Image (cartoon, rainbow, N blue to C red; front, side, top):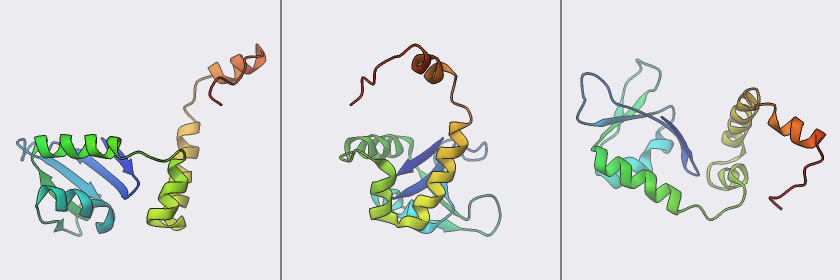
Length: 122
């Protein structure tokens, strides 16, 4: 699972050799620090693998942390919030993710526009 929060980006998996914990990885230490602090665990560092930073989190703690991230949403634009919390260099990376995911958007938007649908969200 990839998780983007206002404090960073983490990747969570359950490794076959550590099935009792969630292994949460990050490319930068700052992204993992809030979760590690909440869980009361150290961040392991290794130059090997895709992610140099890892924390081994009890599943219940991880679930509560993810829920707390959802509860903390108080912004109307995620990328703008991340610009405030992590800076605009980090936000540039988010724009790249946004563009990549635009490539998998289905055709319903264009069909709705063609049919003259009104914007119901504003």
